[in-house]
Length: 226
Image 1: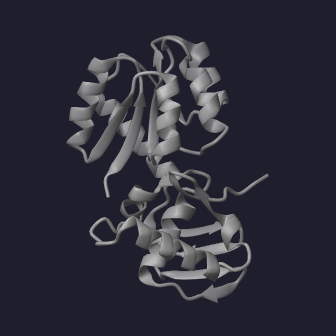
Image 2: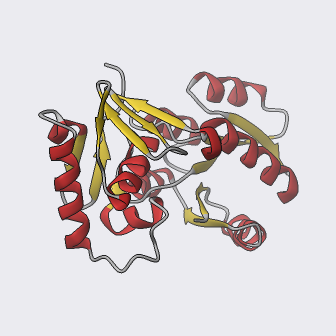
């Protein structure tokens, strides 16, 4: 499963450079030329990280960062003008995970991007996920709800892992199988809906509250916290 990154930047040449360079590293880059379209892309697609320019016409990157953080925990790497310490400090205070001053080398950006992804995504070899009483032992492929073991099919378990990993973030219906590492599975969207329905039932009376349908887009596992 390739890593997917959203670049929010009005510099088309930078997008073309990063699309080619990061693509060679197995990272797919989607481009949004302004903040509004960047936020819209985040609402309709699932991304592993955001590359966010500060200086953009209209809504600047700091405001975009604030809005992203109000709805998502996706890692954010800010792209700032060299020497502009104020933007870097404010960006970090608003919830950015790291920053990189322009101009930068694609190699340095790749290193920083991988670093924020490592911090955001624990190693699957020892990964255990927990949210709202749902505990997933990924290597053992074991699911528990409030300490009670729940029997899931292989596909149900993979779908639940994908949803819990991105708790609080919408995963489009047509991308959910890929997120679950099942892009090779010949399953239609309707069948995905059926598996989600079964998952809700197996999670108990709160299943429908935990796995929410975002009409016309996909599914979201409820985020921890208030």
